[in-house]
Figure (cartoon, rainbow, N blue to C red):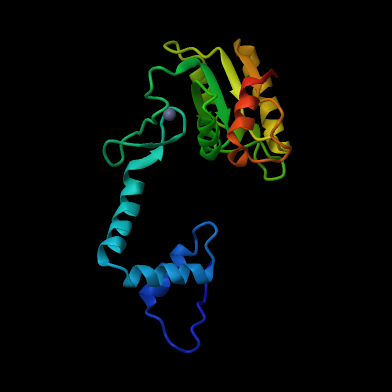
Length: 215
Ligand SMILES: [Zn+2]
């Protein structure tokens, strides 16, 4: 969205307005806050603004989804594949794979400390209303991971949110993956229907994982 930045007649430098418009694209940042941030960057000590600009650029060079699970990760060199800290941790149980919708959900589960296995980030949920069908989900990648001869998966823990789309996705995964000979489980209730894993407290989330049920 392009804000007009009401100034009461005084023309603002166009570069300042441009930065404010970009900052206004950040989640939760409105027009006034965006301009406050832009003015701050224009007047604060120079290194803060320059460091911020350089780090945002480097973020996109080095930080990207883990090529194994989709978690957020950092590569060694720009453009190279990245591996996350969970996938590079050899103490993790490769036979247990937790399937989540988004990276935020993975991070929430990690904070609960109840997951000793690895993850797979779907990136989206089945949603007839939004036109997202089974073909749009990375099921082929998930099947390949389950069949990995070096680290075969025995249990798939489906930790999609307890919403209509989350439940539909869980049922689809059970139907598609059970024939491969894996046990498909679902996090227990305790997280309110329509609730967000990201905002569930760590104890609730930990219990939901420990009390998982067969799907
Ligand atoms: Zn990973």
